[in-house]
Image (cartoon, rainbow, N blue to C red; front, side):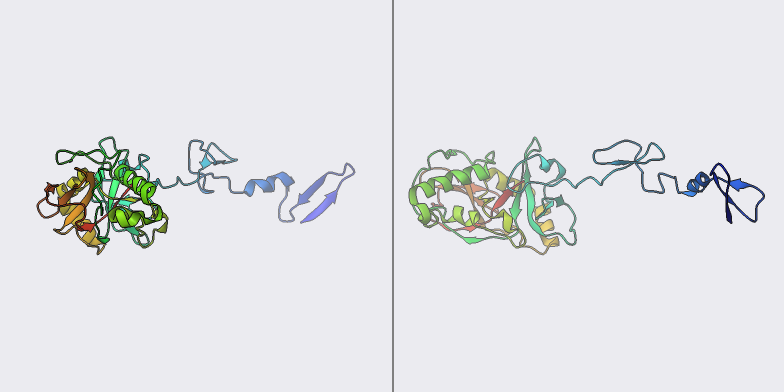
Length: 271
């Protein structure tokens, strides 16, 4: 190839093996111009996308996986079903997912799908509901077995606020079960401390109704099944009696289990 300069300063490339001449612009046409090959695979525009310079295609970022805000009800529960595994990253799945940390199993989803509650993978131990007989202000007394009380975290907050107002840093001595769940920190999810609650009676009734499937999920991740023991609820009957759940029979009782009894505690978390 040689360059010939004419009087008008025009430049041509002459190919020795050819009898005709190419302008410089012809070489640019060898560039790859297929949008799909270049990764522009969307036929519609998108936020933060990049448009293909050679056609009406876009490269769009992958959508972020929807996640729950652990400790809050924000509508994510619509993506879950009872007996799903709740993971520390705020996702739920019926499957065991390698690389993710399970922290609870879904045991309740509200009718409007806005709120879910998931049961911890372990019992925390045996704790008294209270060491005193006080009818907690603002905590509704439930005269009948409160199977429609799903206010786990509202009930828990009322008791925590009351006990701290009365006893300050010594509050946990007077309401041990509530402070045990408040201070619970599951392995792999330290950010959930302070977000766990003593389950309301209706939530534990849902556990009883779905016990087989919930236990199967717990078994798949090698965690502690529901068992047949009694479990405290956050639902109050009177100044001396809370409601307690019998996991063996599925029944509730309030007349023989005074607040100073110490059955097991197993918290829930909202999502």
